[in-house]
Length: 275
Image (cartoon, rainbow, N blue to C red; front, top):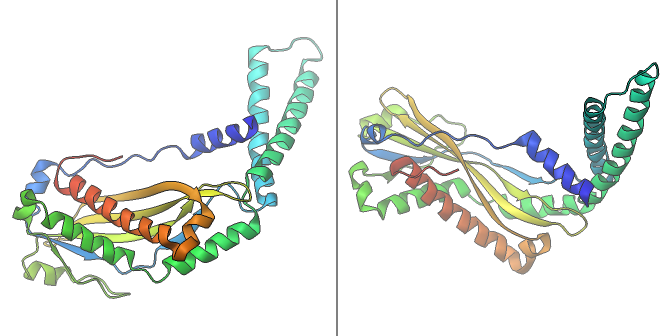
């Protein structure tokens, strides 16, 4: 258990936390004028993100972390209690080899245990593709952003309207938007969705959805703001996501769209800065 915990701690150190931009200032907001919400045509990536898929991949990944942690432990010990005398260097090398080998084996076994079996991972990905493939989440998000903004009297000055989605493979006609009286365009795009987490033969996973938004001036196409937003659901055993006609997964889709729309409207046009 301690080896598994260390693995996740090392992952957190490696990946860290991404910084987010500050929301538009009040001055920027007053200059946005009439705003159009545009859903960009795209095919989001659908992924199952977990520590490793299959025993071999988990053992290899765990072993690699074991090498790193073993070398780090050896170096820390040498700095804390530096050996002396003519056998100092051999002693350091022997200690490093023994410690690193031990950590590699222990972390390798822990990584194999932590990994989701290959067949289970393939099953999750296959069902995920089938469930998400034909759903237009980007269009749904653009509609919900418009609905949320329309329910806010304090945003009436921006006259936020939803534009027709861009056709696949085309560039949005910003000149036409400018002629139609739009001062700013809010581009909306779902870039990634899927499951995250899980370990072992019966992984518990969370549904996630990543959306990217950009505010652009129609006059000169200057980018005023860009930001990625993420929704992360509660954790459930993967079988429950697909049971009863994927009822819980469909519910997560709706919750993700509603939650992200409220966050986007709040941060871009009101005052709150979300992490």
